[in-house]
Length: 93
Image 1 (spheres, helix red, strand yellow):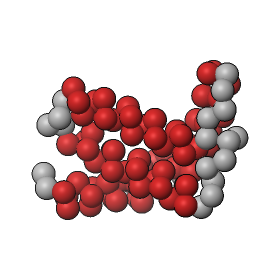
Image 2 (image 1 turned 135 degrees about the horizontal axis):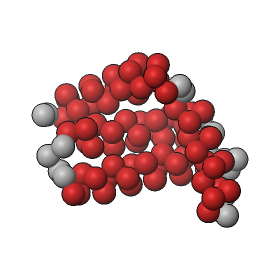
Image 3 (image 1 turned 180 degrees about the vertical axis):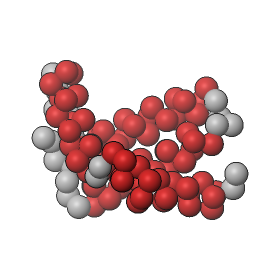
Image 4 (image 1 turned 135 degrees about the vertical axis):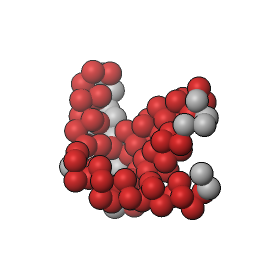
Protein backbone atom coordinates (compact mmCIF):
# COMPACT_ATOMS: atom_id res chain seq x y z
CA UNK A 1 0.00 0.00 0.00
CA UNK A 2 1.53 3.33 -1.01
CA UNK A 3 1.32 6.62 0.91
CA UNK A 4 -1.31 8.10 -1.37
CA UNK A 5 -3.59 5.12 -0.76
CA UNK A 6 -3.02 5.27 2.99
CA UNK A 7 -3.90 8.98 3.05
CA UNK A 8 -6.87 8.46 0.76
CA UNK A 9 -8.26 5.69 2.96
CA UNK A 10 -7.64 7.76 6.09
CA UNK A 11 -9.47 10.66 4.50
CA UNK A 12 -12.39 8.42 3.60
CA UNK A 13 -12.51 7.03 7.13
CA UNK A 14 -12.47 10.37 8.95
CA UNK A 15 -14.77 12.26 6.61
CA UNK A 16 -17.48 9.73 5.85
CA UNK A 17 -17.28 6.10 6.95
CA UNK A 18 -16.59 6.35 10.65
CA UNK A 19 -18.22 9.72 11.15
CA UNK A 20 -21.50 8.33 9.88
CA UNK A 21 -21.22 5.31 12.17
CA UNK A 22 -19.71 6.82 15.31
CA UNK A 23 -20.60 10.51 15.23
CA UNK A 24 -18.43 13.60 15.08
CA UNK A 25 -14.84 12.94 16.10
CA UNK A 26 -14.74 16.22 18.03
CA UNK A 27 -17.61 15.05 20.21
CA UNK A 28 -15.98 11.66 20.73
CA UNK A 29 -12.63 13.21 21.67
CA UNK A 30 -14.33 15.57 24.14
CA UNK A 31 -16.33 12.74 25.70
CA UNK A 32 -13.23 10.55 26.00
CA UNK A 33 -11.33 13.48 27.51
CA UNK A 34 -14.01 13.91 30.16
CA UNK A 35 -14.06 10.19 30.99
CA UNK A 36 -10.29 9.81 31.03
CA UNK A 37 -9.98 12.94 33.18
CA UNK A 38 -12.20 11.37 35.84
CA UNK A 39 -10.59 7.94 35.63
CA UNK A 40 -7.02 9.26 35.71
CA UNK A 41 -7.59 12.10 38.15
CA UNK A 42 -5.88 14.59 35.81
CA UNK A 43 -7.30 16.86 33.18
CA UNK A 44 -7.14 15.46 29.65
CA UNK A 45 -7.92 17.58 26.60
CA UNK A 46 -9.56 16.53 23.34
CA UNK A 47 -6.23 17.08 21.55
CA UNK A 48 -4.48 14.85 24.07
CA UNK A 49 -7.05 12.16 23.31
CA UNK A 50 -6.09 12.35 19.62
CA UNK A 51 -2.40 12.09 20.53
CA UNK A 52 -3.02 9.08 22.76
CA UNK A 53 -5.07 7.39 20.05
CA UNK A 54 -2.10 7.87 17.70
CA UNK A 55 0.04 6.30 20.46
CA UNK A 56 -2.31 3.30 20.58
CA UNK A 57 -2.10 2.79 16.83
CA UNK A 58 1.69 3.29 16.97
CA UNK A 59 1.99 0.45 19.48
CA UNK A 60 -0.16 -1.74 17.28
CA UNK A 61 1.92 -0.85 14.20
CA UNK A 62 5.09 -1.62 16.14
CA UNK A 63 3.79 -5.11 16.85
CA UNK A 64 2.33 -5.67 13.39
CA UNK A 65 3.84 -3.20 10.90
CA UNK A 66 2.32 -4.88 7.85
CA UNK A 67 -1.27 -4.36 9.03
CA UNK A 68 -2.31 -1.37 6.92
CA UNK A 69 -5.22 -0.35 9.13
CA UNK A 70 -2.78 0.81 11.81
CA UNK A 71 -1.09 3.25 9.42
CA UNK A 72 -4.42 4.48 8.07
CA UNK A 73 -5.69 5.11 11.60
CA UNK A 74 -2.49 6.95 12.64
CA UNK A 75 -2.99 9.31 9.70
CA UNK A 76 -6.68 9.69 10.49
CA UNK A 77 -6.21 10.42 14.20
CA UNK A 78 -3.41 12.88 13.41
CA UNK A 79 -5.63 14.72 10.93
CA UNK A 80 -8.54 14.86 13.36
CA UNK A 81 -6.31 16.01 16.21
CA UNK A 82 -4.79 18.71 14.03
CA UNK A 83 -8.22 19.96 13.06
CA UNK A 84 -9.42 20.07 16.67
CA UNK A 85 -6.24 21.87 17.72
CA UNK A 86 -6.57 24.32 14.84
CA UNK A 87 -10.06 25.24 15.99
CA UNK A 88 -8.73 26.11 19.42
CA UNK A 89 -10.73 23.25 20.93
CA UNK A 90 -7.65 21.94 22.69
CA UNK A 91 -8.60 23.26 26.09
CA UNK A 92 -9.33 20.97 28.96
CA UNK A 93 -12.87 19.80 29.58
